[in-house]
Each structure stands twice: as structure tokens, then as C-alpha cells.
Image (cartoon, rainbow, N blue to C red; front, side, top):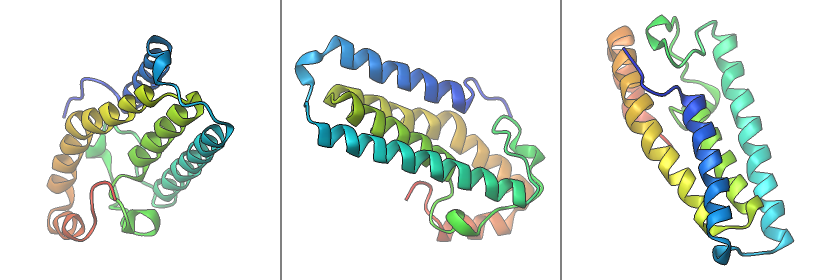
Length: 150
């Protein structure tokens, strides 16, 4: 399985894009300290969610490496993974949304939409294919009962 762009690189590119869009379109700024605080809340929630998701993989003694899902030794379906199949990517999207709010610019939100689209096509779908190959019916059942995002 080959990936063109690692998830962290996609996240960082989208974060830079959000910042760039905010700089290029200052007329789309919605200034308020409340929005900034909401943004910090989203960022903090994303960081916590990401840490908990990684911890679940560590506890299950399976790989966290998104480039090599074929090395997965366990299918994690408990904790956060009962509600979403991709809490790590969801966390990254929350951080991007929070960043847009903290920047106070509506154009910056486009980066989170782009992230969700690219991570789904370039990472999640190939990962799901690999997990289906490894875990077979167990993954198929999990996929039926748990949404990809929320």
C-alpha cells in the first residue's frame, strides 16, 4: 500500500493553507475574543482526542504508523473507536477548525474541509482496504456499526 502524502504532512499543509487564506482574505475576518476562545477550545479538544486515540493503539500494542497499516496487530474498536473509526484524523480536523476560529477568518475554514476530503481519499480509504485484508469479517462488522467520521 503506498501513500502519496503522509497524514501529518497533509495536516501541516492544511494548517499553512488556513493561515495563508486568512492573510489573503482579511475582509473575511470575524473579530471577537469569543471566537478565539472557541477556537482554543476546539484545538484543546483535538489535542486531547488525538492523545487518547494514540494511547488506545499503544495499549492494544498495535502500530500507530499510518504509512504501514498492514503492520496492524489488533483492531481497536473500544473507547473512542466505538464512535468513530478515525478519531486521530477527526482530532486533526478539530484542530484545523479551532485554528480557523482562533485566526478569526471564515476563509481559513476551507482548509479543514480540504483536509477531510484529502485524508479520506489519500489515507482513510487505502487504510480501510488494508484493514479489511487483515481482519476480514471483524473489520467488515466494525465498519457497519461505526461511522468513518462521526
